[in-house]
View 1 (cartoon, one colour):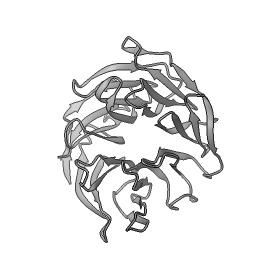
View 2 (view 1 turned 45 degrees about the horizontal axis):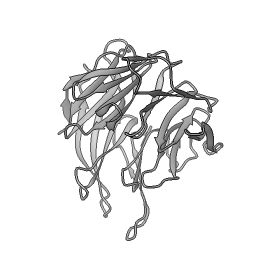
View 3 (view 1 turned 90 degrees about the vertical axis):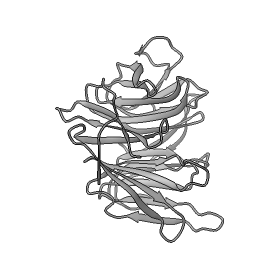
Length: 313
């Protein structure tokens, strides 16, 4: 296992950084990283300059999830408490305090959001998933009583316009695993990955013209709960699909996925220096440079927010 130290430290959050979202292209330009924190703020970073270009303050509670609209639309969406707030990035000034839109359709704390076209999906502590029509500001679809416990993650599935995937902390769910902490889908829509509380990773590979649907478990993927999962954008059309996983203890692994008899292979293993980050909350691949990832969490000193850029090349 290789030890990694930060290339860049993005300082500013006063409490633990809970979530990240990277946009290769956004209304603010290329290579923008958004970070949400327990300090009830969000910061938007230009990774080319390694500095904050916008700040969002006065949210009601911790920022638990972030989503960008498409690069043609100027909004960033933040989940805080039981609401989602949309901010118009066309506004002048460095600090935003007033949202352009507010969506209050959830009764309990929202853990995760995702945006596709003009639809917003939310997952909350009641185990409910809602899809909101952003143009009409109305509920498009409610999926209640689908989960028997907290719903931690929701994601629109790529290449599947009306399919979303959600995961819960419960014994009755898609893969019947222990607690699920993280979820992602590959860009081609063929893979779904979930990070689990028993240190394992659950994979689902969709059936193709010549392949059958497969459920694959990577047992003992880490030595602690897997709370970070992200697919890495392939370098080329024919390149193998890669998956980045992370554990709260700072362990980071890179996996290569395949369609054959050996469906996965661990390509690399890393350990974030505990002197720079005491607890890892989120991993986000960044395509500005090959092998660059953003990691967010808690600093070594009394619950300070930590956001670093690392290289795993």
